Image (cartoon, rainbow, N blue to C red):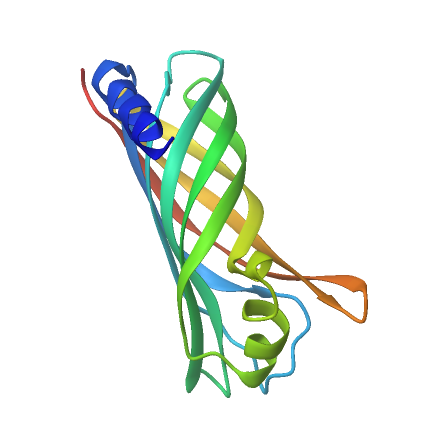
Length: 187
């Protein structure tokens, strides 16, 4: 099954039209309630590679794979909790009018590395069950197509981590706002 998936992805890359690379740098500061002292933000990053982007269409969709860093800091920025994930944005829907675009997307991510975890984070979010290693999220971008190859936007991204405590489901979220760019590879 894995070989078939890898073969399909390679075939998609070779035959794909409208391939793009995208990046995001922002302040990962928005978060749900927590047990930390003086919460603050960290630099959130993401790198995307995707297919099917056709900026000349008024309504468009695309698919992308993403490597992402998000988290928060506390104690006036002296301590940092950062999470690294890989994921997929299975559907990004966009509307473009006079080179101004609004994009909405959903994402599913697997957390593969964490740094600076608090006891609260370890006990409640990350290590309770296998499902806690996954996040789901959403976001949007509002930006301008400078030319057919380059797009710059303001982006908001949120990630939700679900955990269970005493048979009650709880959601924790981490997100932020920042600057996004996208380069459409010429084919």
